[in-house]
Amino acid sequence: MARPTIRKPADPWPPGEPEFSLVLGGPLFQLLRHARVSDDTLGLTHRRVLLAILVGWVPQAVLSMVQGVFISPGRAPFLHDIGVHLRFLGAVPLLIIAEPIVHWRMRPLIRQFRLRNLVRPDQVARFTQALDQVERWRNSVLAELGLVAIVYVGGTLLAWPRYAALEAGAWPILPGTEGHGLSLPGYWLVFVSLPLFQFLLLRWYFRLGLWARFLWHVARLDLELYAIHPDKAGGLGFLGESLNAVVPIAAAHGVLVSGMVADRIYHAGAKLIDFEVAIVGVLAFLLLMFAGPLLLFGLRLARVKRAGLQAYGALGQTYVRDFQTKWYGSKPAGEPLIGSGDIQSLADLGNSYGAAAEMKVVPISRSALLQFVAAFLAPILPLVLTMISMETLIGKLVGVVF
View 1 (cartoon, rainbow, N blue to C red):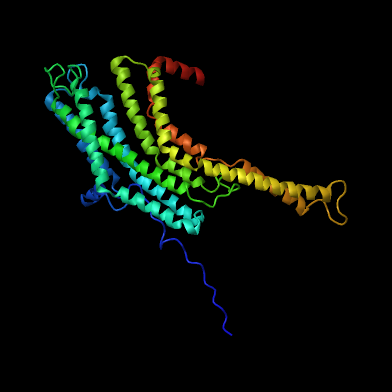
View 2 (view 1 turned 60 degrees about the vertical axis):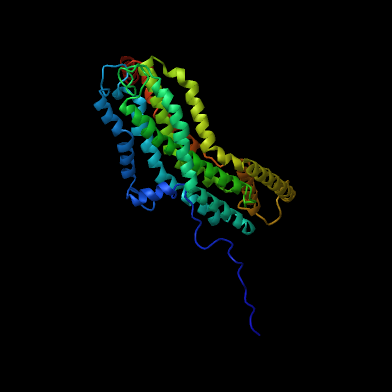
């Protein structure tokens, strides 16, 4: 009699590992590949940074020299515009450098759903469908054209009157026009440099919107989560690494705020303390945008934690009752107390209940949160020196040392 063949259940996942990238696609990416300033995995970052500086900052500097406003004796020559230099020599390169970092750090996160068997077989199709939606929007020509339209229709219309209304002596204003006409570098700033910066920034916001949409779909799945998972987040602790991936973007925002505040301090006599509310507000906005999507798992993780505490609490009650019945008063004859497996099992049960009690309802680690905040504040911290003279600072340092 032939032995019956045992068939393994079909693998619900598509062949190969789930592919995911927030940045590896889109018409601009293809254009940069054909121009040989990017490879298939967003390498050659230095070429894209150099290209952005050559397009965004260098023409402004050259045209300022031609126009005579580079180091003019006016109140605001190009050389003294700290905000412009930090925006195009600091923030823009950071936004570009962030692309390969986000690609390589966030790509393995999706594999974890399969490696940890977090998605039930009957819901794999919904999971992969959510990935496909992200890929379609990421590669959408209409989406990037829409961003360009927003930049030029919205951004330029707002920037034109703001720069055209600057006082005479400001470098974007044509000398002798009393603030009613843009200079050559002013035109380049309004119609080329600012749109480039705004497009890069808005594209990151668009990508983060796609990431939030994907997490929203995943949070609605019935995932295999456990209250006693060692990562203390039910098995979703790896998602907190997405906050580490976007640290360069947080730093870019810090550079922008630093440039704006520095201009007001050095040219308008403001103080750093005057911008305390604005700095905190920007930081709160960034945390809501970058860490906020992870809050979508809060309700489900809270339910997993409550269920785990109830289950291990009930198990503990049963075990403790039997343990006390067996060992309280006198130990069983012939069974040594030292080395007893019952005591070790009681300790293990206590550890399991403690792990469930320590479970977080948001998959964000404290270290990742601190790194993100530190990246934003680091470019702003040097401005603290404007609140204390160098002589006083040196005196305090000498006093501490000696």
